[in-house]
Amino acid sequence: MEVKIFNDAQEIAVAAAELFTDIINNKNDAVLGLATGATPVPTYEKLIEAYEQGKVSFKDVRTFNLDEYCDLPKDDKNSYYTFMHENLFNKVDIKEENVNFLDGNVEDWEQESKRYADAMAAVGGIDIQLLGIGTNGHIGFNEPADAFTDESFKVTLTQSTIDSNQKYFGEVPMPRYALTMGIGSIMRAKKILLIATGASKAEAIKGMIKGGVTPKLPASVLNEHSDVIVMLDKEAASLL
Ligand code: GLP
Image (cartoon, rainbow, N blue to C red; front, side, top):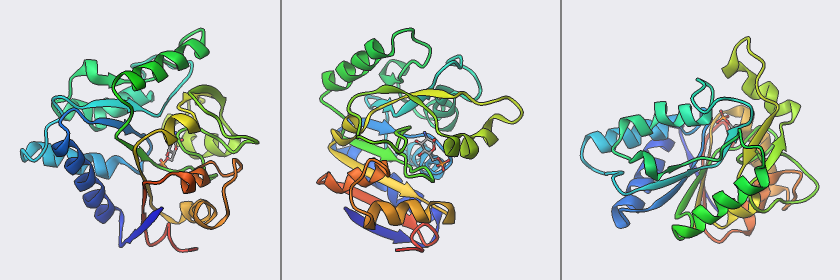
């Protein structure tokens, strides 16, 4: 795990977008694993800038998002499908048919998990997976648990995640369930970039880097991957 500490979120965004741009420019049909949340937004802004300046094209890029809420229409303003379109896809030249999401409204999530795993395998797997981290150490929506998961599954969100994410839903109660890539799906990515900013992430980052590998802090599994870059601002790195 290579840990890089930056002055602020903007510096991380520049470095993260450069890494993605290099990967896409080396492989025009790169397969990107993408994340939602506030943390990756500045990186997506830098990628849009690079696209507008002609430094990168998403014309042949394929994407797989980490997770999606259950019981929320795909085009709800709070779905991750909408989030990704508003924050990246609508602003670059990616083709809609190359954009992949878990469908949080299926009846049979196990069948949906298999569909997603097969779709990832069919394009040769994820070249680079972008991750944020929850304050409880979750990645995607892999919440603290007794064992690591493998392929995508339906998760009951923890109170800590609901407390962190309810703000995006305002007065409307947020969903209690989500479909998420499992730890195995994430770990099969060829390269992983985890970014974390702000003091609220410092405890989870300390646990991830110094606490040993445990499903009680899901991000700690990244210590077992051979190609992980962690980009932190000073606040997120403050307990290291
Ligand atoms: C959400 C997402 C995660 C994300 C995390 C942190 O629950 N499912 O993929 O990493 O929360 O979000 P933020 O970046 O807003 O702190």
